[in-house]
Image (cartoon, rainbow over all chains, first blue to last red; front, side):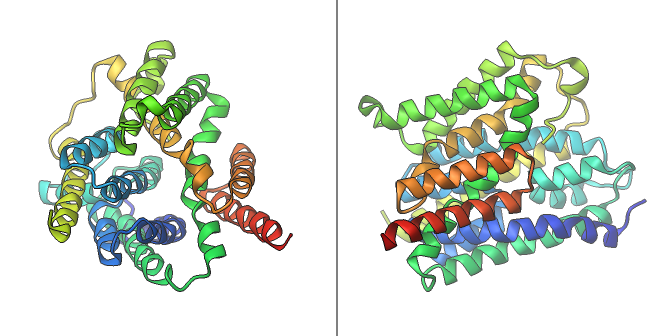
Length: 237
Length: 106
């Protein structure tokens, strides 16, 4: 059965990837007017890239709490599915206290690695897996938030695209193989552009826009491209 | 409104909602979701969310639009050939940097 050290080893590549993305998250947050300490607090308490990017967008616009809650719910809903799947993979000694701690750090990458493990997973393995990604995610945010102000403009401008680059790396490969994913991406992008560019829709804030686009596009995908039974049980990222 | 209070409550709302989504299924659910439509819907949600957040925002992520377009082109091509997250992100940044450097020195 995998132990704490195995977890650390599996978590290191995830942590290195997080370092670069959280660094740009820190820069982006400060650029949007979020205080550095708040940016770090967000990373310490949320540990999710897409949700945090949407979150600072809503804060920067002075959006309401209900909008924030709804945006986080829709954007992070996928974690419910991952947690559900993960709950069936934990070993028999995984008690409620361990589950409450583990839940804090169920990210796309942590879920992907944990799912790929052949055996049942003990708490000590999951803690090892989570530790470095969590530290690097928070530490990278702090570095970005603090160094952002001393970095030259050209570097900052170039780093602004990093987080979107990561998003492309997540959505493009499955779109190549799965027609449904491609259609969902195209539909979401088209809707997002419509809301962004049509003047009559200006009243829709960025957080609400993500919700509208995601719900319509994902429902469209589920309706037009239902998955085969055997591959429908987890979101394989 | 008090700005510090607004920030604090916003972050608390973010963190609480995000945690509950992850925690409730892990702590309580032992059964699989039955509804086929819900399962399919949840499968597509991450892609829809990321696409909606990326487009068109990515085109305004750099100072100059042509640089952002170059960055997107590099990111899409490298993603198509299944490079890792880190490689794609760094290469997109490099593309933006180079194009802005060239455009500003013209």
